[in-house]
Image 1 (cartoon, rainbow over the protein chains, first blue to last red):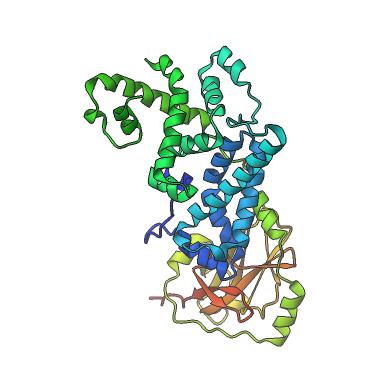
Image 2: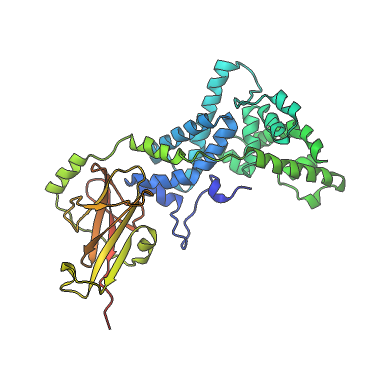
Amino acid sequence: MPSLDRSVRAESATAGDGRPSDADVVHAVLNGDRDAYTVLVQRYQEALYRHAEQMTGRPDVASEIVQSALVKGYEKLDGCRDADRVGAWLFRIAANQTKDYLKDRRRRDVPLQEAEPLSRDVDPEGDAERGELGDRIRAALARLTPAERQAFVLKHVEGYSYEEMAELLGASVGALKMRVHRAREALQPLLEVYR
Amino acid sequence: MKKELQAYLDGELSKDELPSELRAEADSWDRLLADVQATVTSEAPVDLRESVRAALAARGTRSAGRRAVDWALRPRTVRISPLAGLAAAAALALFIVWQSGGPPTPATLDTEATVYIQFALEAPSARSVAVAGDFNGWAPAVELSDLDGDGVWTGRVAVEPGIYQYMFVIDDSEWRTDPNAERYADDGFGDRNAVVVVAPPPASS
């Protein structure tokens, strides 16, 4: 389970630690303190980057997506309706940009293919043959559809509840459970290693 | 996969609630998922924050010319509700330094102690940082220094006890509000000044 400061869960005000709440920072930025936005950047860049990197498999693309999403978040900050949940709001911006990237890549590279591989420089079949566990895990994840991979990673890597995922992704809890279940089915052959 | 095992992995059942014949498989899943977590976790590049900051900076900075005209044309007034407590501000980036004793300076001739405001700003990409405030007529004449090159610029100004507003000036052109000030005040131009309260020195016994 990730620690709170690495997730997009809301950062609340606490009386004693001196850390401003998300809402405090949002209000400061909206009142003209541009530099206060760096607090949000520092607070959420890791969670946004991890998601983008896991979805695209490309660190360079993930960096561009996160930078673009954070800049867009700054420019559209007055459209964030719940300042206490600005982390989730930024996540949705980054997730939408990630989705756009994947759609665009699919249009260009792999039209109409349901199970889109990651573009990271991995060869799923070759990795499986090499047998190294990390490679096998990455290869198995790479064979999932983007939606399944996203749901699985949020559930089992980031540690979100289905309700939190539904809020982040705008999908129903039932649909998300189905994606995670399918992802686990796809990973089941790896279970042999652990029996 | 059995429904009960899915429910366990979904966090809806505890391991104790699983049929005994499924617990070994649940353990296997726990180990596999721990390895998945260790495998796919990645860290953001160290320069990501700075690249976001640069991208934001490229989207416009305040006009030095306009601010200069503003100084000349609009006298600053302090309109602040009563403020109390210096400790929180000092804990962040702004420190009030009481210098007692020592060789006399012009500012110490009439008082027993000189009061300084010590400023600090993290600005690793800046070439120069100055501070301007109503203690010096809003002229960015107080240059801060970064002698050790760690990106934190510091400097201090001798003042009388009172309430002061100030801003930093980066590279002689960009006005920046102190992100670590405890208090802020509307500057009347759509921006905010940082505010610092300098209390009188404690009475000497």
